[in-house]
Image (tube, rainbow, N blue to C red; front, side, top):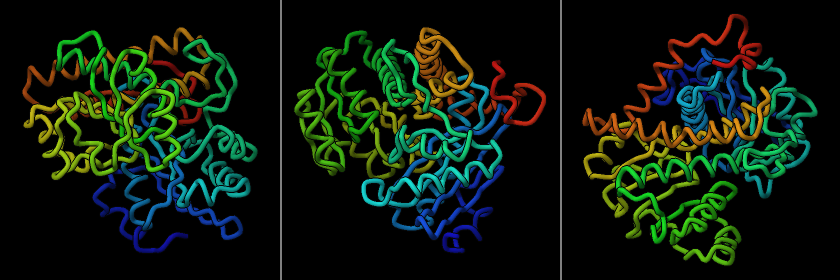
Length: 373
């Protein structure tokens, strides 16, 4: 068990949002300390990534898993998927503390949840990690070898679809804000150049954009510099460069009272989850004339891809669904303009309409996964 203070205060926690389930898991033999949060299963079983990160406190991990799981409910609903929202976090440095035994212990824990939550890849975990978990549970996703949405061989990794969907959404934001169909010469700063960030950078490079990048890992940055001609930036500067678009693709809560005032970009469109530190920062961005592409709308490509892995679909169907991210964002932007309300508020309303009123099929959540609506 993690320290008792966070778990004792769950129901009064500022990020608690009527979550259906929260479990804390500790395995002394492997060193595993993990939290699983299930937010809402009205549309189907909860699906979301399993993140491994060296959180400095248990409270930080709890806050992250509560926010992320809620975001997955909204993401799946907005993408019209028959899935609920859930997330899991493992406390530890994935480059130093990850072991096969630890991943197996996580699989044992997931199996004990009986299919209420299905884990997929996330920051700090990989397809091989999920396959190790899968030795002890059926409730993992994103591990099947198949032809990917782009026609290339895929091992189940949702990162390519997440990056592609973010690229489609970014183009929709540029079209709406700047009136541009062409990205040639567009200046983009990418914070976080890992699996998703690097692929997004490649899409942008191929479209003619100029790139600035930062990552906590020097080798990730160097790869972007060497292979994509990106310009390196510092942690302190990456969000505040004089560019057209800022694309946060790492940890969340980077848009806050201080950072928003320093932004020089007129568009924020990135793959990271929970970009806003607090809901009111949505309006703060709008007041500054900055177009915000709500994160749970723009980064839905990965969950779309994983959903179709389990239900079965052609690559063409998956790609067509990911392409609708641009249409969804355009609708959000237009409704925001007409109403004068922030984009995130509009996106929340659309998602809530879908998951609060939707009943995919009768029966327990695990059986609803195969239903399409």
